[in-house]
Image (cartoon, rainbow, N blue to C red; front, side, top):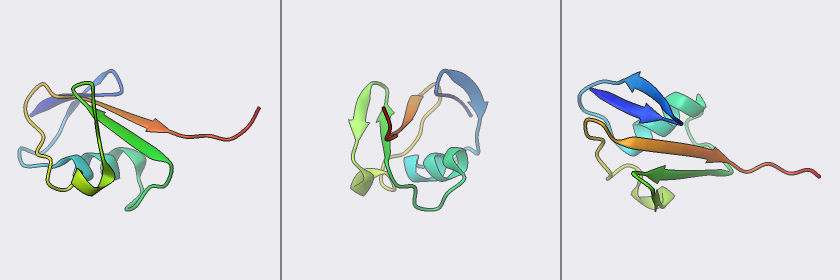
Length: 68
């Protein structure tokens, strides 16, 4: 299945949920300081695992950073 992650087309396994995608693209099992939007709607961390990914979904993974 083809989706967009941070503006780039990606091919992923047919059955995946949002948590799978976050783990794959952050290379971390439980990333801290991460927010995720699916098709322009923010999805809370508690709902990542229960949110299925569909063909042509657009996902934005955002990291918080400190500094000035």
